[in-house]
Length: 301
Length: 297
Image (cartoon, rainbow over all chains, first blue to last red; front, side, top):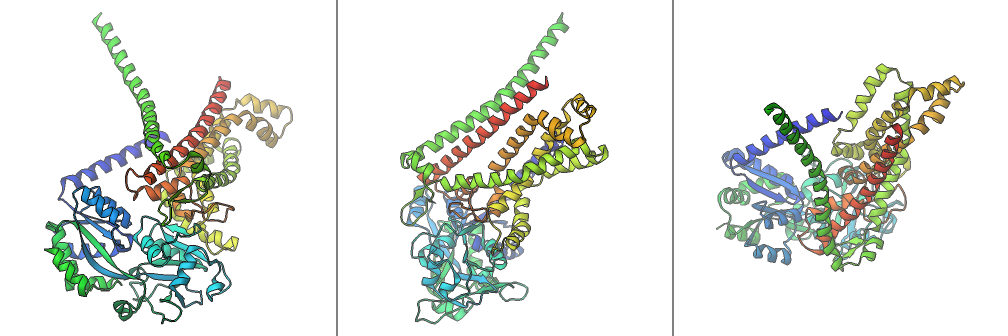
């Protein structure tokens, strides 16, 4: 066995060396890294952009917003995707390394709270969702659901969505340690679809089944209320997200160091153009407008 | 004369070549240990060692106050590994006994390589099976809403450590001198009695070493448990609870942690504890295996 394993191992190494070599010798790729919520969207944007500009290769990696920020500071990527704002500490650290981050809002995401399709519950308040994730509510009955244990799905601490949710829904109090910490949005959805008592939070672009244009089978997207008295809105309701009536939406950011150059400049300019924003909408997120767009155009220069 | 000297020179070169290789692997091990120690120790400028080992809560990114305690992770690692061994030992030893004693040689020629190929399945594939196959199955039979728990991890790790256990156990069972079983059979012992009372005791040290090596594999496995156990940070109280082992904790957090912070050093401290644990397991395996080889001679 061992000699066979060795041979396979040697072959794999050779393949890796050849592959790595081609990458190094080939054209300089634009490295984009970060948010898992954004990875599918940016991948598709990159593909469409490369169709038009075949000489400007772009590589998109996920891993989480924290990974993107760390990657940019450590110099392993040119564009960092984050689904949360950069922390002051991170900006300071970047400046120390001579990196001057510039931010581009490329899409708006309404963070969606999802439960299993069989759960009869339709809406929750922000406070209730926060209590569930802090571990104060352990049974669905306490928030008007069926008599069933709550099974929590969330992201890991390197996720921007984890941080955004912590700050805006949990009121900056720690998550319960009972939460299952998943690798990405897709894994949370997979978990909630198969788990009758499951609840999770994901970017809105992940809940739409591309084939039907409707939320995925076996999944229910909860309507969210600001408080007891407010009206509940769905994250799929464009008007409510635009007006801010849906309480948990956020811009998705791409950051460059200084003003973007070369492929990065072309890519970002195309994303914030009407054509790029159309792709953003087709992927289930919302286009950027108003002041954020003005800032984008200013930052491009 | 010159021919002789040439041969001597060649001899010395070959000797040096192999000596360098032997030393190199030792140096690599020492180097890794030194690096781990060097990067882990600064963590204890801010964390007390006793607190680190006995606190259940691990929450370095807490919005209130960072807490570094790895007791829950140590217990989770031990729980998942123990579960894996409880499943893998009877099956592994059973299969090994079957292959060495019962199976037709043709069956053995087919089955043993297949078992060994099992060792080559990438851990990420095993983890995937845990999510889509084992998880839903466990949820159904346990009446829980999901199957991402310690038992899921144990089952998968059992599968992953089986090839090691089977392969080495079978080798040591086959190495039991023929005369042992012939003597037993001549004294009217049945095949079952011969296997259980003569062959397995005679090969016991080899089997124990096999189990220890399998255990080393299970303790250090990362991707599979990361995918299948749910990664909840709470203290494990049952097999049907989501747990986070030491390996998955390092894998989850090391990618994003800012360098040279307490959190960064603390992750290396977790690695150091894990290294010491696997080192002890491997040491025991080595001692047992050596004893067994001495007896062989």
